[in-house]
Image 1 (cartoon, rainbow, N blue to C red):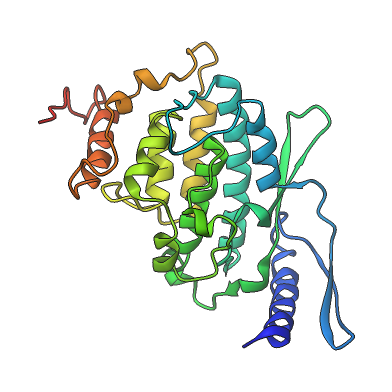
Image 2: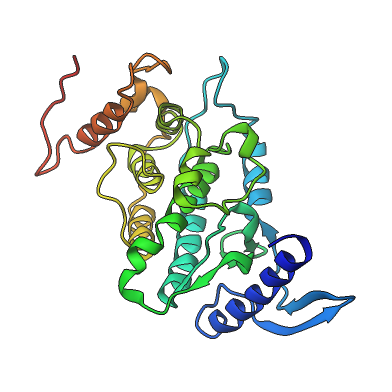
Amino acid sequence: MHGKDKYSSQMKNEFTISKHLALQCSSVRAAISHTEIGGLSAISLEWAYGTSLSEWTKHFHETGGPLCLTGDNEPNGINYHDKNIILQLAVEISNALAEIHNAGAIHNNLNPSHIIVETNKNGDNMTVKVIGLGSATLLTDLNGISSEIQKDLLSLGSILFEMFTGMCPLKEDFCNDTFSEGEENQSKMLLPQNQLISFLLTRVPLDIAKLILTLMKVEGCTPHFQSTTDVARQLSSMLLNIDPNAPDFDAQTCPSGLKFTPGKLYGRDFHLSKLMDACSRIGTPDGVKMVFVS
């Protein structure tokens, strides 16, 4: 399918999916009309107030200066205020996607430009709308939905990575692309896993880093999430348990204070994920008491 036909097909699909979902999902715009203008399909949808998540993230991180995955600059640790705001928005986005999945639909092309964020005047309340449903699909059998949503969950992990770090987790050639291919090809668009791990662990607290890396299917992070509702529930728990009196996150106090230079793990990058998991369970009832690294 090429050009005009592909465009018309996506417009028709977005109208159909939106019309179905808007009745059940507050995060999806109502479909108003579908017509043709000059031989091209045209649809009218409810207006979504706010700004794209990509613009929101860019603006949010501007005050902290540009971030880079390479070079000599050390990333700044996330503070309580930033963590609280980003977690609030992460919960909203996860709940919005969970609504869509629970209604039997898969987005298939979720990215920061397809999420609209509206903030109230005081800046203490955020709502989201999910757009760009031209590639979405409706499932007739919800019994297999846990496997069907994995692509969306991988996209969600990439989105959370960018929200917390201000950096696109995709290789430079793909940063302006959308995830329109299968899950396997989507994974190939990501930066090397050791780079993702190293940058996250020097930027965000361990519990958040683990959740994001699990969504992004980094080797050693198991088990994978089976539903977006589970993701939203875990993020909500993190938000409720934030300690406002805790010191700001410091990369030097994180287990990733061990510096792993890319290319020096000799093909065993997944060991860092296992180390991260073991360290996070130190002191818990079922966790280890210490971790030896040789």
